[in-house]
Image 1: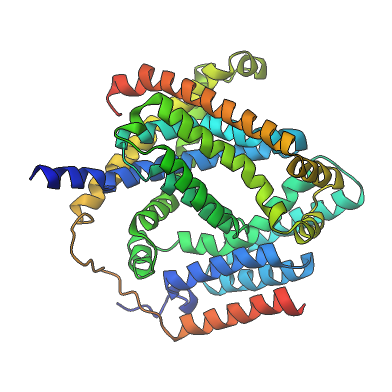
Image 2: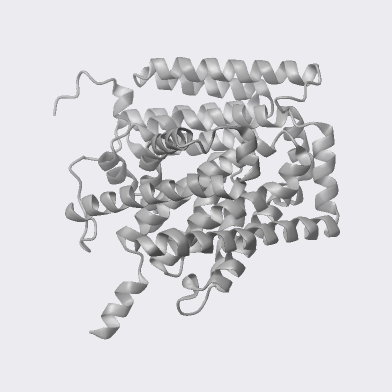
Length: 205
Length: 232
C-alpha cells in the first residue's frame, strides 16, 4: 500500500501540470519582454538576455519546484521552451532544449532536490547557461545559411560579426555562460526571499 | 448537430491546423527570401479568411505589411531604431501565428480530443493545451496588476522604478503568481470533476475525425510549402 502511495506521488498529477503550465506562461511572457527590451542593443541581447531571463524566471521556477517537488520538471520546462523555439521557426533548437532539460534533470537527481535552494540554484543555473550557449547552436549548425538568412531578415553586419566572434572565442562563451549562471543564481536567491516572505506564509507552496 | 452554417474550413480538425502551424514554422525559417515568405503568408491569410476569420486575417495582413515595409526602409536607410533585428523577428513570427491563432480558437475539449490521438507524451500535451488557454488570462491579469500598481503609486515615475527595481519587480510578480496559481487551481478542480484523472481510455463529446477537407488542405499546404521553399 505504501509503495503505491509513493509511486502515485512520483507521477505528475493534473494539479502539477496546471501549475507548471501557468508558471511557464508567465516565464514566456517575461522572456518576450526582456527580448524586446534587449534586442536593440546587440551586446545586451547576446551576453545578458539569457541571464536576465534566468533571473526573472527563477521566481516562477521556484514556485513550481517547491509546490510540486517532482522529477521531470526541468525536462518538461526545457522541452516546452524548445517547442516555442520550434514555433518561432528555429525547429533545430528542439533537440538541443530536450538535451539541456535532460542534463538539468540529471543534476537534480536525489530526494526532495526541488525543494533545496542550493540544488535549485545549480539546476536552474545550468539551464540558464545552456540557454546562453543555445545562441551558438545555429552558428555551429550552419554558419553560412544562418548568416544569409539573418542578413535577409534585417540583422546588421555588426551584430552578426559580434555573434560570430563570441561563438568562435571560447573565452567569450565562458564569459557569457558565467554571466548567465551568476544572474540565474542571484535570481534563485531573490526568488527564495519572495518564497519565504509571501508564498510560504500564504501556504501556496 | 447541424453545422451547415459554419464555414467548411472552420470545421478543420485540430491536428490539421497543428500540422499547418508546424509547416509554417519550417517555412518561416527556410524561406529563401522575403517574396516566398510573403507568398506563403498570403496563402495562410486566405485560409484564415475562408475559415471565417476575415477581420483577423485583415489585421494580420496590415501588421505584416507595416513590419516588412518598415524593415525594408530601415535596412536601406541604415535606421537602427527600432532595431531591424527586432522587426525581422516579428515579421518571421507572424506567419506561424496565423495558424496558431486558428488553433487557439478551437474549443479546448475539441482540441484535446484531436491532439490526444497524436503520439505526443500526455504531460507535454496537457501543458501545451493549458498554456494556450492561459495566454489571454495572463495578459488580462497583467493589466489588472499594472493598474493596481499605478493607483498605489508604484509606477508613478520612471525614476522610481529605476531606484527600486527589485521592489517594483516584487510588487508586479507576487500578485501575478498568486492570481495564476488561483486560476490554475480552479482549472484543476474543473478538469478533475470532469474525469481527467480517470485512468481508463478517454472519449470526448466532440467527434474528432479527419475528413476529406482535412486531407485536401493538408496536401495543398505541403505542396505550397515545397513551392515556396524549393522552387521559388
